[in-house]
Amino acid sequence: MNVARLAVRPSAVARTAGSAHSIAGRQPSNSFLSSRFLRLPQRPSLFSTSLPTYCANHKTPSTPSANASPNQQTDKAGSDHYSSALRQNKEWAAQTAREHPDLFPTLANGQQPQILWLGCSDSRCPETTLLGLQPGDVFVHRNIANILHPGDLSSGAVIEYAVQYLRVNHIVVCGHTSCGGVAAAMGNKQLGILDPWLLPLRQIRERNLAELQGLSDEDAALKLVELNVREGLSVVKQKGAVLSAIQERGLQVHGLIYDIGSGVLRELDTEDSEEVIKSRLTAFAVQA
Ligand SMILES: [Zn+2]
Image 1 (cartoon, rainbow, N blue to C red):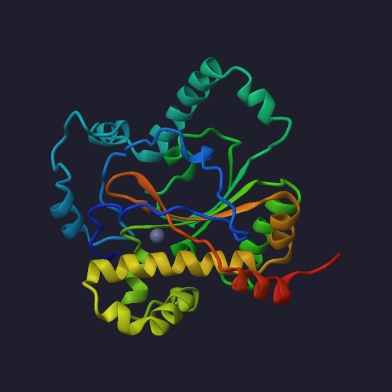
Image 2 (spheres, rainbow, N blue to C red):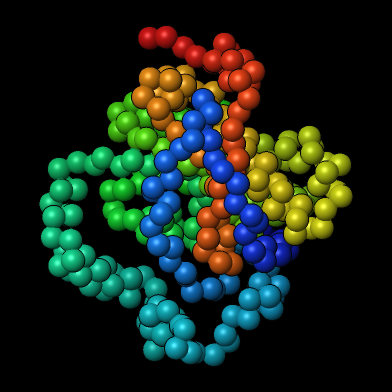
C-alpha cells in the first residue's frame, strides 16, 4: 500500500457557501462557526497528497523562513517533533492556565461540549484549532476520509454518547479538500485494509459515475468529498437517538467542507424536503 503516491490536486478555493439547515428545516444557529479561523502553516502531507503537486501549487518554502513553524525550526536544530511537542505542551499548559485560569479546573470536573465533530483523521484538519475553540468545546470522532459506516461500532458509540449523554446541540460532518482517502477511492489501486474501509466511497463513486467522469480530476475529487459528507449526514440522521434529539430538543445536523488551502469552512445546504423527513422518521424513528 502506498497511498502517499496517489495523486490528488488540492482545491484552489472554497466554493460559495450555502446555508445549512437541520433535518426539520430549521435555520441553524451558526454561532459556533463565528470564531476566528486560524490559518495554518502549509506543509506537505506524507499521507494524503501528492508531494510534488502540492508543493508546486502552494509554493511551500524549501528553505527555512520566518513562516516556518516552531517545529520546523526545531527540526533544523536536530531535535524531533515528539520531543519538541512535549516541551511545547508544558508551555501551552502554562500559558493557557494564565489566560484562562478557570479552564483546566472546570474541565477536570467534566465536559459539556456543544458540538460533535465527525471528520477526517488528516493532520491538517484539527477541528478545535480551526474552529478557534478550546479543550472541552468539541466532542470528536475522526477516521480516514470521514466515512460513517452504518454499522460501525466506534462512530456509532461516539454519536450516541454525544447525543444522549453529553446532549450536544450540533452534529457536524466535515469533509475536506485534498483528502487522501477520497483520492484513493477515485483511483483503482489495491490498498489492503483500506479497501473495505473505503467501500462506501467507491459505492458513491459508482452511483455518481457519469457526473464524476464529466468533471476535471480536481472537481471530481471535491464532488466526491461533498457527496461523502451528504452520505454521512444521511447515516447520522438514520440513528434513532439523533432523530429523537432533533424532534425533542432541536439538535441540529450540519455538513461542512474544510478548504485546506485557505483554512476556511464552507457550509453545505443540507435541508431535507418534508417528504424525505417523513420517510426517514417512518423508517428509522424508534421508541424506548
Ligand atoms: Zn481526509
